[in-house]
Amino acid sequence: MKPNLASALFLTAALSALSGCERETPTGASPQKKAGNQESAAPKPGTNSVGDMILVSGGRFVMGDKTEVDATPHEVVVRSFYMDKYLVTQEQYQKVMGANPSRWKGGKNPVEQVRWSEAAKFCNQRSQLEGLEACYDLRTGKCNFAANGYRLPTEAEWEYACRAGTSTAYFFGDTPARLGEYAWFEENAGSRPRPVGQKLANAWGLYDMNGNVWEWCNDFYKVDYYQEAPQQDPKGPDSSQTKVVRGGAWRFNAETCRSGYRYNEKPGSADACFGYDIYGFRCVRALAGNPAP
Image (cartoon, rainbow, N blue to C red; front, side, top):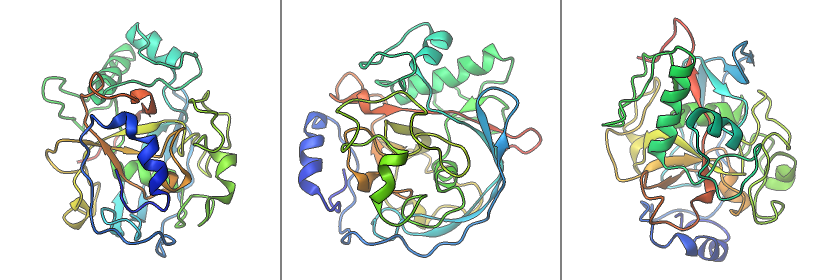
C-alpha cells in the first residue's frame, strides 16, 4: 500500500479486504505531482505472426515516477521482446491449464485469483504446448531468461511497454482526464473486472495496460531497488517477501494507473487474502537471437 496517494481514504476502503496481506510500504513519500521530464526511444513495434503478441522494439527510457518514494526516475535500456496484446483470459487459461480459478467468470474476462506461482506454471505449460523451452524452475521460481518460452515481464519491460515511447504520467498525458478511454478502474468498471480489449490500446497496440486487473511481473519488490539496479535489462532483486504488480485494477483509483506507479503483493497468499480477484497477468517472450543475458 502507498501512503502518498491523493485519495488515501479510498485506498483505506478499497484495501480493507486485503488486510491479511503484508505488502512492503514505502514511507516518506511526497505529495502527488506530475511525472518528471523523461526521454525515450521511439520503437516501431509490429504484430508477431505467432498468436496475439506485439513486438516491442528495444530502446532506452527513463523509468520511474518522481512523486513516488520507491520509483526514483532513472535511465534503463531494454532489449526487444514480444508481449501479449491482451491480458491472459479465462478461456485461454482454461485451455492451457484445464481449470479456471477466477471469481468473475467470463471467457473473455481476464483470469484472476491467480498466484504468482500459478502464472509461472501457465507460462511453462504454454511454452511446452508450443514446443518451446520453459523459462521457470517451478521448485525455486527462478527464471531462465535465455529460454525461448513464455515468462512474466520484468518490471522494466512492463513499464517500457506501457509507456509506449511517452514520458508523461500516463501514456496519454499527464492527467487522468482520458483514462476512461483506455482503462477499467473504480470510476467506470461497475465494481468488477471487464472483458479484455474493450478499451483503446496504447500507441504500441497493447490493451488494458492500465486498470482491469493488476499484472504480475517477474521481479521481486524492493522499495529502494531502483537505486542499485543495473541500467541494462534490470530484473529486480534476488529475493524479497513480495512480487511486483503493475497497472492498477478495476477497484483502484486513477492514480494507481500511472505508468510509473509500483505496487507489490505476496506471491503465494491467495488463500489468505480477500480480493485476489484484482490480480492477473500477461506473458512475454524473448526475440529470437536476442535473449536477455
